[in-house]
Amino acid sequence: MKRTLIKHVLNSSAVDEPVEVAGWVRTRRDSKGGFSFVEVNDGSSFSGIQVIVPGELANYESEVLNLTTGSAVAITGELVESPGAGQRVEVHATEVKVYGLADPEDYPLQKKRISYEKLRDIAHLRPRTNTFGAVARVRNALAYATHKFYQERDFLYLHTPMITSSDAEGAGEMFQVTTLDVGAPPRVDGQVDYSKDFFGKPTFLTVSGQLSAETYASALDRVYTFGPTFRAENSNTRRHLAEFWMIEPELAFADLSDNADLAEDYIRYMFQHVLDNCLDDLEFFNKWVEEGVLDRLHAIVDSEFRRITYTEAIAALEGAAASFEFPVSWGADLQSEHERYLTEVVFDQPVVVTDYPKDIKAFYMRRNDDGKTVAAMDVLLPGVGEIVGGSQREERHDVLLESITEKGLPLDEYWWYLDLRRFGSVPHAGFGLGFGRIVQFVTGMQNIRDVIPYPRTPNSAEF
Ligand code: 4AD
Ligand code: MG
Image (cartoon, rainbow, N blue to C red):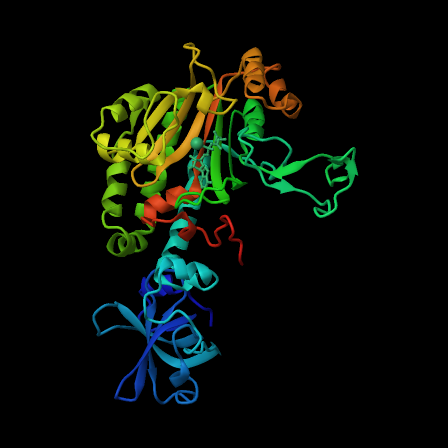
């Protein structure tokens, strides 16, 4: 017989028909009447299925009574309407095949609640918990919604390189990639001889696919990337990873306001998608992780975002009753506490902040006529703060050249990027959305380390 995923069995109308399911035991209860209730979960949905195992089965005493939390089984039986409360259907087993037991002395995922911190040490087992199963399903749904959104709007999915020689953000936070013997590299005149390295020059893991996306948008009109990016910034916060996934759309013939429209539409689309497809999981998060996540998603799906300039944001913060750890002044970057104050207290809705001072933003952002600011935008969400960073790009060759030089970046690494401004240059814009942060927002999970299967953070790369 063909095995059916439990999510389909739970919705099935094939009552009184044969069925086969498989998965991992969550609980076993033995009844005085000489049979057992076994709850099996295969991760396809939040709920597992209740299985009634009659004592008459040949392996009842030898195997079924040894089943404990975490054991792997396949069940053949009949799907029947359940008389008990809590489930519509259940399976009456005619055969229980035991694949693997999980010794309760050693298996760490017993009934007792384990802290998220402890679960990070057993990240290979945590997908078997309610929380991490639900996070994985929501993460998957958001990824699917991402592709659906961009494909429906004729964006071309682009694979940009992970190994690069140019620093897309110019912030010097790159991990080096090398095949040289780091203990004893070849040298000339005391300096490491990179001509002997794999690529013949120093290379790094990319911090962003943006620069390559710009070249393709300048030929194919609209593109997006969705891939891993890497940052060697030593920030041990609950919203930073050293390896994180980012979605980066890039649009030709577009300005900052087109860019903000796209970001808003994309975020609302993702939220609608999870509301339509992951309600069981979201209800779990709403009840057990953060009360109000569901209302928040509904509210955002139905609303426009607030748009303000950086200068207006600073004025609002300077007038705030709150006291901040980091002082607020025009020219300083917004810190997480400021971002959250704007979106949670001042406006109580998502906020798009535009036109930041040029000195605190990347070299590629388009310079505004005031000479002080650039056409940048950050989208801020309650709880997580910055979710999107983007801009209109500098399309004027001379201005870009000046900006790269002013920031002290090596011109020879950007020759091809500058070439775009020499041949058929057009106004264009794009942004990057931090995928982990959007999963945090949707689930209410406090720490970004708990929304990616295997988090990479300073001093932590186990598994
Ligand atoms: O604001 P960022 O640095 O922008 C860029 O990388 C641009 N090149 C994007 C573009 O215009 N194509 O990063 C974009 C987003 C941030 O808003 C944040 O959500 C997320 O990426 N992000 C991180 N997420 C997790 N861990 C980190 N260390 C992150 N750094 C940025
Ligand atoms: Mg940013």
